[in-house]
Amino acid sequence: MTDNIVSTNEIHSAATSSMGLIVLLGGTGKTGRRIVERLGARGVPVRPASRSTAIRFDWTDRSTWLPALAEARAAYIAYQPDLAAPGSAEAIAELTATARRAGVDRLVLLSGRGEPEALRCEELALAGGPATTIVRCSWFAQNFSEDFLADEIAAGRVALPAGAVTEPFVDADDIADVVVAALTEEGHAGRIYELTGPRSLTFAEAVATIAEATGRDIDYLPVSLSDYTAAMREMGVPDEIVGSLTYLFGTVLDGRNSAIADGVEQALGRAPVAFEDYARRAAAAGSWPVDGGEVAGSTQR
Image (cartoon, rainbow, N blue to C red; front, side, top):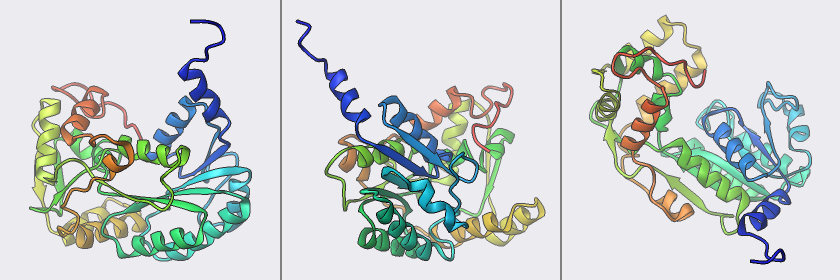
């Protein structure tokens, strides 16, 4: 090999570093922080934008939108609290128009399966924004380790208003990989990638899988939606979160999303991560107590 030969890694580094700024609207959440890590590893300039970042982005303050998108080539949109929430369609329509005014030429929208409101937002983004990719996801596996279920898993008892319904839980790392591909590679514009895991599980089966990965006994207790809602309110859970979970368990988790989809394979050319592999990885990382060990600190709060 001579000094005139440039390595593949050098070519890749040069290409990614010249791609231009990518803004992540929701860059501190379960998907956002993973995307930040991946883009940073590639040398791609990235700007996470939220209410707590130096350049603020707040869905309730539209004066922050254009400054957050300034100088961006591409943007990732993770709407808060959820695309099923009232007002989401209007917000997405205006956000995509703002992105176009800012000179953004590529968008990736995080969406949810089986939500009519989310479908409307997808349509608006595809029709009104720059070149857009939709990443439509099933229930995140990481809800068991990085969100509201982590404490229940740690305590050894999970109570949810979900009986026999199955869900093909998707790994947030798969979501991040697809988003990064859509933000940095050609050929994804106009595509709708429906992301799921490789098989569907009941919530009881998911909890049993986590119990096996941790070597602990973890009980699963199906409860009524009314009892679950009342318990959340008694614990002081904010009304916004109560409403979102009530909608999720009372409407969306009715079996409409039980079928698996091949979006991960379409976008990445590989199979999605199995829930068993996620559970083993999360247990090894200390997301839950293992074999009677101490409860690890939460990975996200």
